[in-house]
Amino acid sequence: MQPTPHMPVYLDNAATTPVDPAVAAVIAECLTAEGVFGNPASRTHVYGWDAEERVEQARSELADAIHCDPREIVWTSGATESDNLAIKGIALARRSAGRHIITSKVEHKAVIDSCRWLEQQGFEVTWLDPAGNGAVDPDAVAAALRPDTVLVSIMAVNNELGVCSDLEAIGALTRSAGVPLHVDAAQALGKMRLDLSVLPVDLMSFCAHKVYGPKGIGALFVRRRRDLVLEPQMHGGGHERGLRSGTLATQQIAGFGHACVLAANALTEECARLTELRARFLEAVFELPDVKLNGDVEHSVPGIVNLAFAGVDGEALMLALAADVACSSASACTTATIEPSHVLRALGLDDALAHASIRFSFGRFTTREEVDFAAARVVETVTRLRVASATPDLAAGR
Image (cartoon, rainbow, N blue to C red; front, side, top):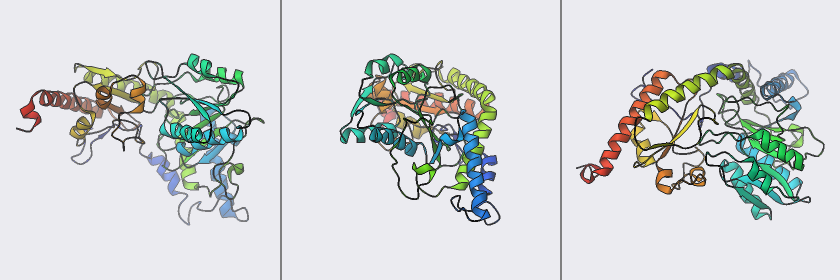
């Protein structure tokens, strides 16, 4: 498939995915008077009962995808809200037991900024450096644990690198220490197996728009444990067992649930397909000299590739590619800043190489033809920009 004159190849699926047509059909069923449009909290008539049934069906669909009890799912507006609820909710509920939190320097901004806010409230945060590939070393977590630690928050899949941390090992450590473990799994759902019936994780954040569902809906897994108590961050009508008040968006929740069904059914096949696309893309791009992979192919999900092109400014490269290839220089949540990626800085890249790095992310609707086209355009564009930067007259447009 070749791009149209107005639509470049989309290789920014880590930022967001298009809604799957089958998911869009489910969403549409919950919008109009002929569909399930009622308020799920309306308990006095059939419109509300039908909406509540749809919400609970979706809760079970997500629970089945991650192997947990549906009662452990709390609906939110997205992974950012889920991160805030988990981190602030646990820290504030447990502040009499301690005020120490452990996280890493490569977390999503929703986690980093929540922890920074808690620092302003008198909490102490240990910021772990990542290993060379961007993953968090369980030994680093073990060394940081203290008697007053009340929470550890480590992401499952890094949103810029695609690298996976060893949640089983980290969870075993936190479980042994009696410390809750929160995991941001926004980039993990639908891309790797998540079995919370055995994984020693207490809280896990999700969103729909990374898994071909709608934007504006997410969830927080909260393990059913007597000693696991969260302080709500949003107050109102007491929805979601008092943890997250607000009228539930039936259409978005239903779409999220169906997106989870589709993702779970296709997980093995999709991972194999994306692995092949990644290999195809890297083989072509590595024909260029001085290209560095940021991360680790062996310990990552296959849909995300982060590459540093020495001698080329990343923003200039993206602008030169923009008509043909849609990609990004970092997380979509941080691209408003001109600062180098905090993730790449934590890996030890200097500013020049961090600025020269681009994230390409493949998805369900990415084809081989698109990957081949995009790789060819990257090779051609990087080569041209390097020649221009080495030749002052060309760089000046003369």
